[in-house]
Length: 515
Image 1 (cartoon, rainbow, N blue to C red):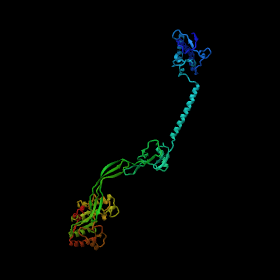
Image 2 (cartoon, rainbow, N blue to C red):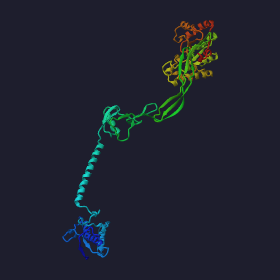
Image 3 (spheres, one colour):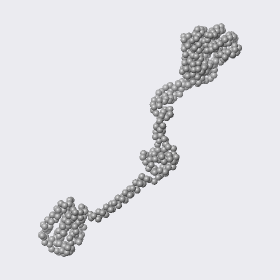
Image 4 (cartoon, one colour):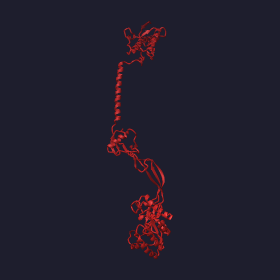
């Protein structure tokens, strides 16, 4: 054990040996405290208290002085410091304690020294821990409360007033478009709808299958999700646009129509000019729609009377033959021959089959044979009216009439017809345009088909003038009045300077396009 003696601490002393002794004494006093602190720390207790007593240097206010042998601390002191440091390092890493870290107690510190360094690893008192825990809990509670208020305000914002399609609505600013629509509909707005999916002719293929309806907020497309509306926002729901099916396109000629113009006994076809069109066929519906790309020029059925330029010619015509029983056609042929007259016979196909010899004689005599239809338009049961028949039947009535003539004469007849009853207007004009060049009416109707009496037939026949076409009948019944009137009138007309010509000869006087 080393020797020590007490001396009064004199700050003004310059004795180096005294200074060293004071440091050594301070270190010796602190070493047990370090050990006690470490032991208490390991046990979860606070630092051990410094022992106090009357003989203690700290209690007397005096610092023990350590004897020195030179300028260095005694080996015993150095060894004690080293041993204490090693023990502390072994008990608690990574705290490193040196002699300079150990401060003297507050009541023995010399002036100007720093307070003792607090060990960061030294446990806090339990009371301080409890206070910290309480403070932390309070702070956490406040944070949660503030967060809850903020969350409530976020998810339950105050409503705003907006205008939807002219209707005032009060809603939360973060509503979706669907929620806003429901509120506006409840307030009287008509619900928006999706567009329809259409065929190319405008008919509906799928209702609601077009473009979806849209929503605009202040003129801008509404975002997906919450709208984030502002007070006074203007919202517009717009119905979706319709869509149209895909289609294929085929370019075709556009047929021209036929317009009847003028008046007169001669009805001439003047061809029009076809246009161009696109025929669209719907990919889904199969519907076809024609779109004109170049308008056609309609043709005409031009009606006029022959202008013979002063020539005194009359065209005698006989319908409904040939007729063999009674032998009316033969009798008429005899009278014509006696008066050097030519005539035109508008024959019925069925009658040709019954009297082919009569047809042959008409042809051989130089008269003209034209068709009056296949069976006088009786095929549809509606009597003498081609216009009441189906288009395909109208065509058959004419073409089969041509065939009957050719079968007997061996010659293709001219495409000049007389429609039964003179009924030739409306859609039939376009239907028969490819098959007919002229349809022939009359200027003088002798009404012989009604058997008004020979005198009445003669009266009508004598009205004929230059360029007139006279209607009579050689078939269809008893035509004895016609035979008698014809025999009486032809010599008289001939004496007046008239010649009797065929329809073909009469048509040669004029160009229909000039009439």
